[in-house]
Image 1 (cartoon, one colour):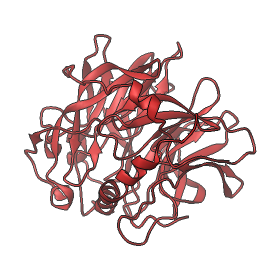
Image 2 (spheres, rainbow, N blue to C red; image 1 turned 180 degrees about the horizontal axis):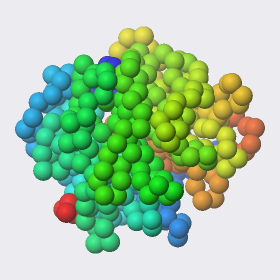
Image 3 (tube, one colour; image 1 turned 90 degrees about the vertical axis):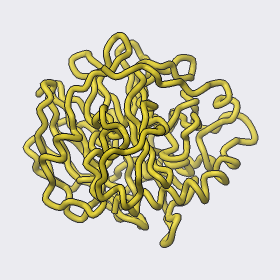
Image 4 (tube, helix red, strand yellow; image 1 turned 180 degrees about the vertical axis):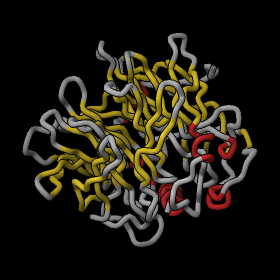
Length: 390
């Protein structure tokens, strides 16, 4: 499935993203109900706000020129991967990215997929990042995938080596396109236990990572290779997790499950499509980002401008934002508003944005094909991620 997903994404990049980019510029002023708050981002992923209101973003980067020194089933499927230190964590100032920590491992496959810094979280007042672009299979043998501590001087220090742990602790159902270096996607801090919840999409598992570098498996979700994606902390403890499903990513085939601290699973929301992230609203309502809907039965599968944000209403999904360009992450800000990063693919040169969705309770909002306004993008230049990793 992972191979099918990346093939679909790569074809989408090659066949439809140039067209989408041409359609991305609104003819008039800012989009009603949608405000771009950050642009110039290179494959933006997870984001958060610190106590002072600053917005921090994980950037997956755009790979590099380093050749892989190890092969795995993923190599035959979509490789070889090439890596380099182009992933980073940035802070947003006046709507533009400012480098906080660079030199994090990023990797690109041969068909357009990019892995790198995927999420950020704060635990005990300290900033951390999860990375799935590291490891020998990804051309970054000296920088494994895992959880990294972001230091005050801008360096990043490895906390937990997930590349090594995944190799030593296989799941029950190893995928045919197994990628031992693909762990470290979504990251959620648990202040009660002083640990992190971490997703490994390729193997299909939820992990617990301690600040001492310890790693344990909370849930093995590998049966059927559903590809778990974004995590959201549940108010009662544990996390919610969404799934992408397999190509051709049919509508209504995805879901959200609750994973309890002891690993017990409860299905809480079905009938979704290609979920990339989940969020819990201030009133406890579940929200989900659907990367692409109305998908095709043949390559490239994905439909540009069909992404949606939905919220749970009983057993149904209510659309709160539609017409989005491949939304990849979702979070509520300190102002109570809902924010989303996009696109999930095709922003190797700083085309990525984060937008605020001004959605009154009970309303349904339709937006243009993309969230990017050309004038705002032009004001921000992508950052150079050159700070070495400790």
